[in-house]
Length: 124
Image (cartoon, rainbow, N blue to C red; front, side, top):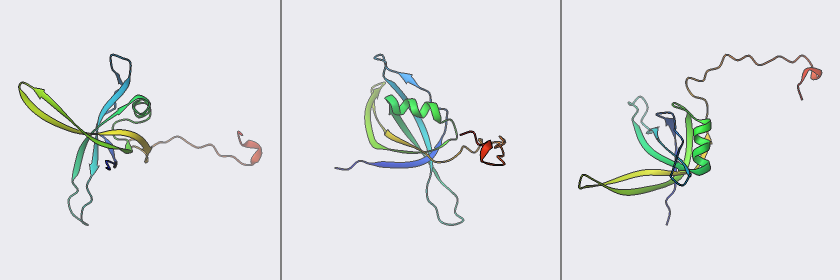
C-alpha cells in the first residue's frame, strides 16, 4: 500500500515546539498550498493541517516561521475524536522529511556582502 504526500506551501503561523508528558517534542502547523489553476484564473488555496515529531519538529521550529516557504514529505493520517458525544474525523499530514524552498516574502535582506579585491582578502 502507498500513502505518500509531498506538499509545498507557506506556514500560516509560527510553528511552536511542544512536548508530551514523556518529553517527546512535537509541533502542529497549517500549510497554505496553492492549487494549480488555469492561466488568468483566480488562485485557490488549500489549508492543510500537519504534525511533526521529535527531531523533525525541532528542525521545523528552529528554521521556519510564519510565511516561510517549505516543502514537506509525509503520509496522511486520520484520527477519530469524540467531543460532546459527537464523533469527528480529523485528517492531517504526518511529516517525516522537510526541505527548504526559498525565502520568506518578508525576508528581503539589506545585508551587504563584503567585497573581496583579491584572494588574500578571502576569509578562508
